[in-house]
Length: 387
Ligand SMILES: [Zn+2]
Image 1 (cartoon, helix red, strand yellow):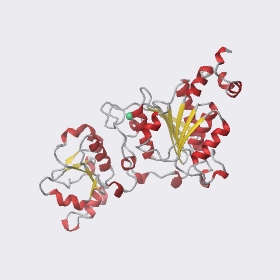
Image 2: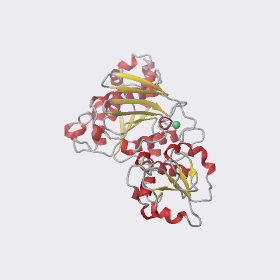
Image 3: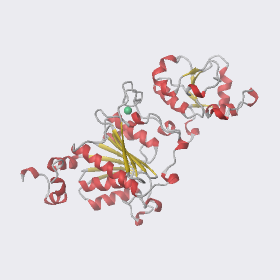
Image 4: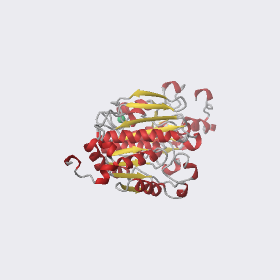
């Protein structure tokens, strides 16, 4: 009986099936009770995460979600009920968790996780489970987990495909080791645009809950260093080995991500005019190119994209080499990064500014806009085949 000290009679009954497992047992259940998990997003993935972690007796659950329950959510976000439509998701999720297990402490935030609040929130929890549905949040959560040393359980779904992994463990990779750069925003349809089979986030979120419990209890072998890929249509599961990338900007040997950045800009979403000062218009660049103090143009496109370098004294450094070739850039000159459409150059500017090139700017709209606005300047029109 001594071994079960500290658990009430009801708790002994509630968690009796855990106590029977040698890999969990009394010690594992104590760890669950003493653990705190932050769940980012109370949607399709967050649903089973919250339900199973609450049922498992995780002592403290944090939930952050700014959204309200919509009728179209209920097909997959089954922690919410029809009567919850219109309520804040965090309120609906908190009520569901409390109804399931009143011993669990629930802390909610009904706003966005941002660069201003993520470190404080994430640093206060033992484990983070990402149930978000967008790339800016994924990179924000990853970087905040790396900076605070908090393990991150991650999953993503699209239509009939799901993937899951565990990042930011002692020797494991982080999300940026797998995806150093976000995909172009116009290539990423959301669930709203692409659709999703309702049960799939239930499966992938359950895998996240399982991995969180394994991290907390130390049971079994976690998904750190492995990416699990599930094709729900064929029910085939594949696994891809992941390694920590020594050149990773977040967790590598020469890390450039030393604080949280503007993740909307990093992922090329949001309104460009909101940011402004990290971009330069083609006309403005033309007006300063020939004068004294002309900026150094760094062309971050891949060599095969550049048929004829449009800027005579440009320094060509592909974006994926920029971090290790910063020494080639004259620190006394203003720098303008250019690429084909103005997305990669914005990422280059993030990197340059983080490395001390405080006035670096990105050519807005890239070479496409530059060439489209060349008109009287007599530059040839864009060659469609080069795109
Ligand atoms: Zn990394």
